[in-house]
Every structure is written in C-alpha cells, then in structure tokens.
Length: 174
Image 1: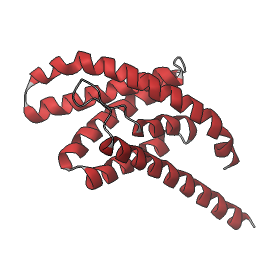
Image 2: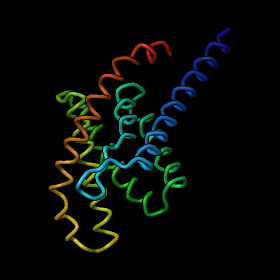
Image 3: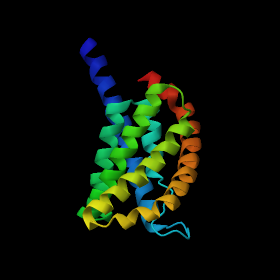
Image 4: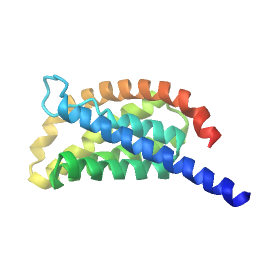
C-alpha cells in the first residue's frame, strides 16, 4: 500500500512537471510565430517566463530550474539554434538567480520578483551579446530593455500571481 501511494505521488509530480514544460514550450512557440508589434527590436513579453514565476511559487527552486533548462534546450533545438540557446541560457540564468534571491528575502511581491526577473533576463542577454561580439556598445540598448523588462515583468508577475493562487490547492493535493 505504501509503495502504491509513493508511486502514485511520483506520477502526479511527473505530470505536473510535464505540464509546466509543455506550457512553457507552447508559450515560446506562440511568441515565435505571433510577434508582438513593439517599436524596440528584440523586445518580447516573455510568456514562457510566466511558467518560471509560477514554478518558483509552486514547485520550488530546483523544479523551476529544471523546467526552465528543459524549456530552453527544447525551444532552442525546435525554433532556434545554438546562438539563441546561449542567449536564452544567459538571460534565464541571471533572471532565475535574481528571482530566487529576491523571493527568499520575503520583501517583494510576486510582481516585484517578476519585474527583477524581466530586467535580469535582459541584462543576461546583453552581457552574452557583449561577450560574443566583443562590443561594449551593446549596453547602450540597456535603458530601453530595462523599461521593457519592467513592463513585461509586471504583466507576467500579475498573471503569474493570479495563476499561482489558483493552482496552490492542486500542488497541496500532490
């Protein structure tokens, strides 16, 4: 009986992680095929980051890191290339580190954590661009990306908070 319960619980967690990865993958696909008309080149809403912020508040740090890493690799192989994976990994790493640190302080709302994550993602990608191109001038683009990160982070944080509130009971049930 104990074995069955453990096995059943494991299956539920595997299903939850599979759902989060699939959702992040679908959101990445949507952003790839339906670009949002924003006058600043390269700026995206970051729909897949919605899954990261939800994961951080529901499945924890290690689960969120795993989901983000799998998503970045899958999306890179499916819709991008090695270069896009490098930029995504750089942005995702900085973003996740900052979000984890801010969440641990307990002083920021989910929206605040998401805003810092959006800004961190842009800083990580710009840093990768500077290292790859060996051109520090890329950082002149930073003010525009900070504004975009604040706006996108606020939208994602707001949506993430609403979804997190709704799925907290599901995660407790697991």
